[in-house]
Image (cartoon, rainbow, N blue to C red; front, side, top):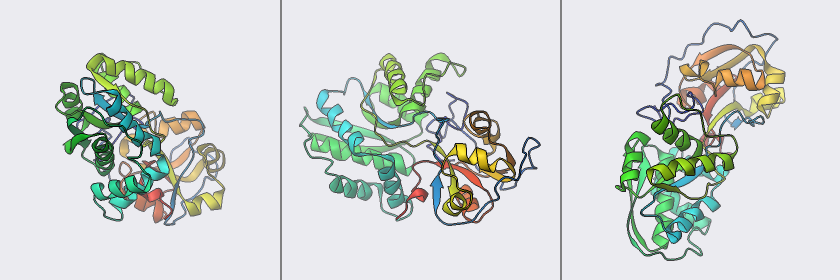
Length: 334
């Protein structure tokens, strides 16, 4: 299971061991379930193609999972936060997609990809020197987190710190280390971290504190962080959240670019939704598409969580729409 699995597929605030937040289960079988009885209309049959696009979440089903630096409060100072915020200032979702493509598809190391990005985007320009000292940047056990960790290393080195990046694993491991100061900085995801801290403090049934609005989410996140000694910098425009993807050929054939258009034009028996098995029960996946957008599908194909099975099923025309991450390198156009 991918370590960055997040709340958008799980019930809000649930945590699991091998994930950055919510566990959605390992890849399921690749079988397709029987047609849903609620589906009506012709729907939109899958259309194979290589290029994938993410349909716009125009009614904001997903919460705001913007990249944001998390810092042990004892290590936080204005220069350190400002250096990390420089990363946030230059990073948007298209750039994050290209960084992921560089590592996952072009086979560059996270360090090389980050250094090339930093050079191309003048990342270290204007960074003020801080008091210095040793900083350990913790990273999750997946490429995107490691890339972000390397970007933080570059920015903090420019601010005069001696920095190392340490891959730790999932949030259940690195968040306590961040609280204790065993690591000082971690790249985070705003809504996911807000719910992690919320449910850790208040139990798995705690009322959600995150929102599709990033300002609301960050306000709640900072309040939760204050309770455990974690300070947060500025959120990046870059988001890594669940996205519903189709092939470019599918979008062109049926004239859909948003989830509202998908629901209006493609509700019906021919439409096949693909994703991890638990997508069928979790509120930010199939039930969310039904409730928020009024989408009905003819069948559900049990695949994986934004992984190769789902992307292959889209490309070979086995499913109409599939759940993958919004920053996936598969969305890169070059």
